[in-house]
Length: 469
Image (cartoon, rainbow, N blue to C red):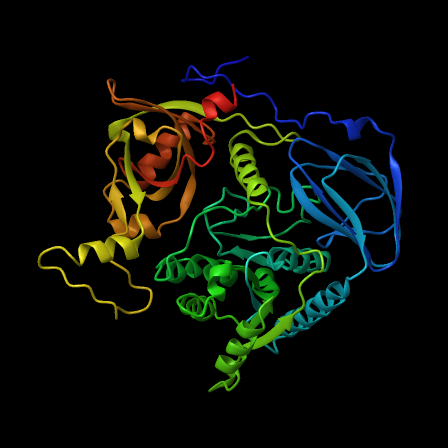
C-alpha cells in the first residue's frame, strides 16, 4: 500500500460494496405501469444494479439511459415512469416495491411548468427582476430534497441553468455535511449520486440568530447579476426542517425570504405552515412584495430517515470528499503544518455563549437584540492539542489576523482532515485536496501571511487512520 506524502499513513483502498448473496442471483425483470414508481432502499454493504430495458424512466427527474447499468449502494431512491417501462434488476435490497400513489409527481410537474412560465417572462423582459426565486419549506422527511432535485433536473432538460442553494447545514451539496452551499447547475444530475455527491442529513443545528442568513445571499445574488442565463433561470432553495417551528424557526424563515427576495414558497407536509405563510403574505403592500405561497403534496414514497443509515451516509460522503468514490478516485495530499501556519477557531453556539456571559459581573443579557444579531463573537481560538485529532477543519478565504466577524462570514475554500498532532514538534499532520504545495503558498500570500481555519466538525467520521488503513 502506498504512503501518503508527508504522513506515515496508508492510503485507503477504493471503497467498493462487498458482494452479497443477491448479487450472484440472476437478473430479474420488473414491469412498471404508466405513472408508477419502483421504490427501493439499499444498505451500504449491498449493491443494487438496475438497467432500463424498455420505455422511459427517471430518478428524481434525471432520465435513465437505455441499456446502461446503474449501481446503487447505501441509498433510498425511486424510479418513476410516465409511460411505463421495463427494468432489469439485480442485487439484494432492504426494501423494494412498486408504488401507485404518484399523484404528487403530476403536481410537481405542474409546478415546473409554472416556473418555466416565469422564466420565459424574465427572458422576454416582462419581469425585470429575473427568474423565479423558489423556497422549499416543510418538516424533516417530507420530501423537500426530492422536490428540489426534480425541479432542478426538469429545468436542466429545458436548457436552464438554475442556482441551487442548500441552507440546511445538516446536508451537503457538492460538499461535506455541515456546510451551506450554492451552485449554478449547468449539466444533468448524476443518476446514481444525485448532485455528484450524496446529500445526507447530519447532526448540526442552526442557531436562529445566524448572520449567515444575511451574508450568504450576497455572493449568490452577485453571481446572478453577472450571468443573464442564471438570472433568468432563478434560484431554488432547500431549507432545514427547523424553520417549520413557529417558535424561533419562523424568524429564520422570514430572514431567508427577505434576503434572497423570494417570490415563490412551496410548502410540503405542514398545513399549519402553509396557512401561517399564506396569512403573512396574503396582502402585499406593493407588487414588489408579492410572495406566492403554494401547498404541495408530498411524495407517497417519503419516509422517516433511518438514523443509522444517515450516520453511515455522512461518513461515506466525507470519505468521498477526500478520496472520491468507486468510479472516481482522488488522491489527497498529506502535509505537515506548523502550529504558526494556521490560526484555528472553534465554532460555539452563540445563544449558549451569550446566555452564559450574561451571568458574568458587569454583563447584561439582552433578549431583545435585533434579529440576526447574536453576540459579537461566535468563534473561540483553539490551542493546538491532541484533542484536534480526527477533526475536520474548513479553510476560510481570509488571513489569520482577520476579525472574528470576517472569519465567521467569509466563504470556505476547502476542508482539511487533521490526522495527527505533534505537540513536541508543534505541527499538524493533515490530509487535504489542495492541488499542489505551490498553490498553498500562493493562497497564503494572496489572503495574508497565515491562513484562518474554522473547526467545522469534531470526530464525525471516527478515526480515519484506522478506518482507511
